[in-house]
Length: 257
Image (tube, rainbow, N blue to C red):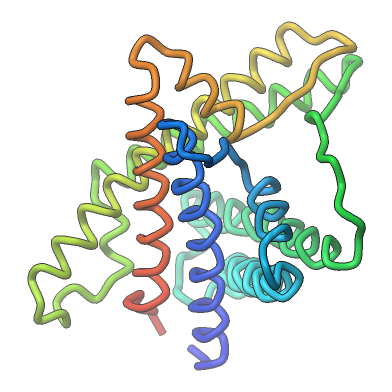
């Protein structure tokens, strides 16, 4: 595989790691009233924009997310690692393309925010009508499948295949990658599952006032559960682990040339 494509992938994994690590850190602080916030991807961009040198940070993040999107599209269209054209391979490559489209939109959003006045933020995605109902249900089912896939990856340990573990002499480092991978995937599966539930519920009970939201509301759902802030905090730590797992991917991922 071309070294430039590998470099793009490494940059992309790093940018994705930043988004998830910040999501976990801010949510963990919010769980214990330490000044954080329950944030999704868009809120993370708004948070970074308000920091010192925020515009520069947003520019770098936008480029990084665009790199991740480009890598996903390369995986989908060119299949450099030989995923294949059987049913399983096609489904996987389509999911890569969708993931690439989502992160490209997020990267563009980050760059556009550099040139915009600070906004007050939105209140969700209002959708109504019969068409909206089916859109919500399709998105919800798709996210539900993604949630289940995260758990399957964790249980089967498939994510470890992306690392050249045999080449790592430090056994503690291998153990560390396994642990943060498991924690990150399970936590991501929980959050995505809750978001899927909200989309399906909205589709089944559609009204003109329906507003579909994402990670922020999933955190609120966890916080309001019987376990209170502790479950919220555990999932927040898990998402932080997923961010660190992305950093490990950026550094140690092996590529099938």
